[in-house]
Length: 452
Image (cartoon, rainbow, N blue to C red; front, side):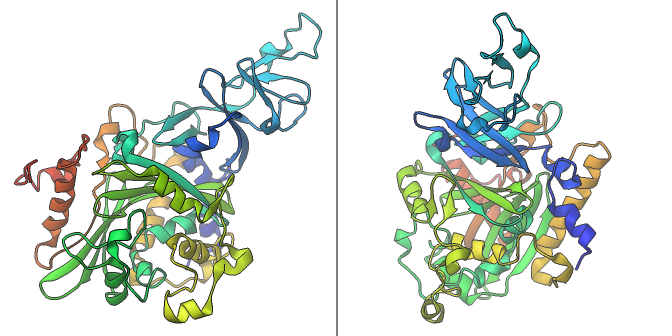
């Protein structure tokens, strides 16, 4: 358990909160590129407790500026896109992507009022299907050269979903390997050949065992946690028998992301981005190491659950997440359908808007959560001292963070430590695009060749 003061320290993300100051040291997903398609590329954005508006001008440049006009506070999300910027519909004040006022048409001719007016604005860049914003001070960091950022556009797909809870409890479900054996338990296995685009539904690498069976029947995993340059590595072991062990390698990507295997061919890199203290979005980039991503199928699968324009779940607290007691008895552990995003959403939203950690009791299976919270507090302290936190990179160090390696497969009970690296490296070397082999494991699997 922790005190209320400690809980506030690691959850609240306002501009004056210690954790908020940490979050502002990093690029944050602000919107999907898809959200600014169409005739009027303007979207209101609430990010880290700030109300902003994102737009794309006629030249294709992105701008992220304060949502309330510097004149008298009208809502710029209803503004007009014209003449090189976004024009307020109240009195016609025009702002470009940097926030500079270009025109105040109601003022007398010759007025230079606009020259001294600048709307608060933040840098934005487009990367891997997501528009990223930097809300911090000074020069923003470089992006790490991880797989989802170096893959060609044909091999990535981005999506998001809204959760009505604090970002931290949403993140912590992703670094909790034990929960998958319960929250995501299916009582019957499906044909794994139909598992494309679905988490925990395919066969584990190196076998024909479906992941649903592995999670269901081997529900007391051994969890190892290692500190890395980018956060944490989690290695979860489920012993099948004396000769075989299921190995799952996942990663916590600081500050609020994780990288996990989705299938033998695809990984998910996912961030849990604070909208404010009591809401967040998960943003995911699906990266394929084999064939190009079937984006149409991936989008269609997810839009079956998520409604536009706000990417909110059709199953939510207002309809009990589609809970069916008969299904809970016979088909799934939760009785909430077969989409694991619904399971996760129920789990984290049911804790309340901000989980009361003064009342929790952690066990051995929560060791990754314990290690992450320690890391989070340490990095908050760094920023408070004026130091750079972990993964705040410059151009010279961006390449030092590659991968990170992930794996989900069945290997030898003796020698699994090398086995998971071999599987990851073999996949990378066989990919049709230039996938880097992380330096930390490259030297340990040198006997593998590109042909293998």
